Image (cartoon, rainbow, N blue to C red; front, side, top):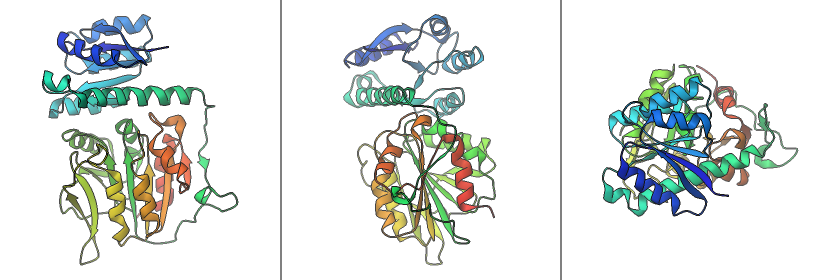
Length: 358
């Protein structure tokens, strides 16, 4: 049976383009279209859709207002935002995650790009990943406790003990569903966390700064979009900018700084978590705490496996039940190097337990 998709956009041309793209895939059908949030709200009160593609700026009721209304009235919907990479819309998209949106797709700036293969591939891959994972998760039994995983998944070998002291770095990677997941982690970390955090979220240029700024507003810990030459400090989160691969290098005085390389996108990803993890093989940290969250694909696994050969690592993976897309955590789990699998609500406390506070 095909998945039913609701399209909400004030542009008749964009509605047609989205319908055409969705209907080319045998697993989806564009069941209904609405020209604004008010019209969509009336539909959603009486009709269930497998997913909703939601524009940001619309007359009468915009995307954000619709999400607020759905949340207030407890109307469940799997919402994927379709927004341009302008500063204003990027900020609104970040707020949309707080109101229940699960992911976003960057809207092309012109009709030629909208009808191109790149946008089609991006839209269908996000839809497929989100709906496939949700179907799998619905078939699972709910879990309320963290799942303890033995080191290298070998029975009888206890989880690695926490070093009594040492210089640690947290390296976090996420993709689809990541912006929403991060709002359940970063704001719950203390400002005196005893380690810096480098964070790779698959996002285009423009969105990463808005995400970093919003997380900084919500958090006690300091969050910023990383800049060339930033010296890593404990109690800070450095977000890889969209369109740049982020590396961590050791300085002559023993500190660590952010640098970027201009390699092409890897598997369509820029930033790519594998590059960040691989750069840490030459770092001076005593332990790298690797955190892998929701996201399609397997980015991070290759880099963490390379890192394990050179440095002590501790790997925390988000569990399937709380992932929007159980791809990246699944890949690292199957690689056999995960130390703990935990639900999203336990990720922050697991990080704190591992690295401590100053």
